[in-house]
Length: 104
Image (cartoon, rainbow, N blue to C red; front, side, top):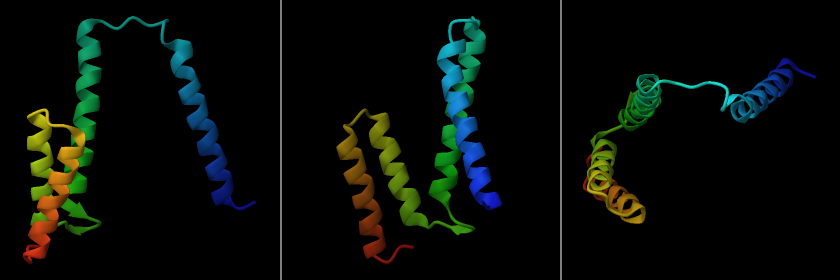
């Protein structure tokens, strides 16, 4: 087998082991409230970073103003606690209208 296949197998085994370890070790550690809050904030910061990177860049180039506007519309509607289908349709619609108007 090639090195790529072996790397894929190793990654699958490691992923399964980590996912299986969660329930096994879940009751063995007690985190303080401060540590639990820090972990939650780190996860939120990671997701926000991924979202911002995806919204701004398209590969190695700027994603365009239309895409950023669509993400902003989605963020605003989600912040206002609108339903998920409305958020998705409004963000996609805003992006599509701007692209139709010629905004990159």
